[in-house]
Image (cartoon, rainbow, N blue to C red; front, side):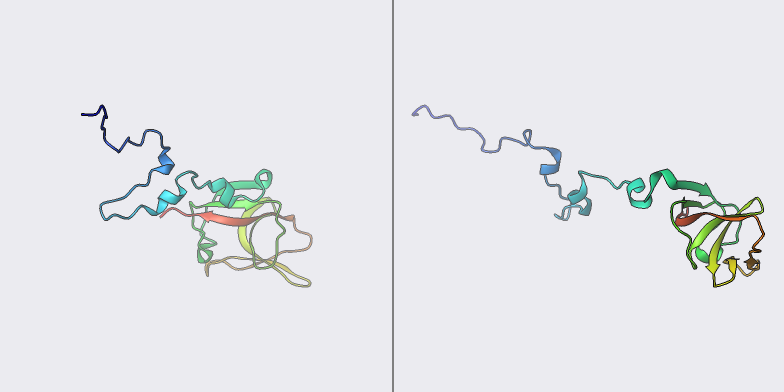
Length: 142
């Protein structure tokens, strides 16, 4: 022998970070989430546009079932957004908080329920009415 020492050519993966080592399942394909393993999904970042003006509220009642908002759901309400006709809003009317679809025409404001069990509410100009915020998302449990 001429003094050469032979060893295995594979030295292991101890000097690699976890993200640098590719994984494979039994079929030989990597998981789709492997490309995004460094950073998770932050729901605050995805669902909240203006953090100081955003509130989470639990819904009680069935007035908005047609819009996919059910009793027990959580709505995300942004107080900094302007209410526009057709948007779902949270409003206060004579001391009561309501979630309804906002409808504003030239001389009339109405709150529309999304169920046949309730009638639209025509807002009297002298009523104690204010738009509290705009509903941006609904968190619904299956």
